[in-house]
Image (cartoon, rainbow, N blue to C red; front, side, top):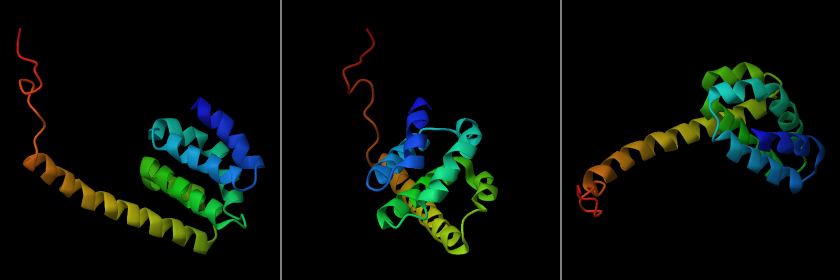
Length: 132
């Protein structure tokens, strides 16, 4: 959370490529948060992201989309009312990426389950942890 205290002002003031890097770093922090931590920070986080979404840099705009997707993955539909400032096309783009991410995660989950069935984790005895 302290990281965001540094990153939020950077996203409010900087230009690309520093802005892009700050947004990406923000996304990494968001991925480690839960809804209870993230919700109260939305009033600080969203305005600079919405401003960055208007950047002439496609890389910055893309970083914003991924940050908003990361927020959605934490907050779910609770994020939707906060996205009212986005244009219709921006909201559609974010929605497309949310759906893609959800689909990829759903496809990965069965694959990971099957992998664990075929390659079970080693038992404690196989790791040399016999009962002493």
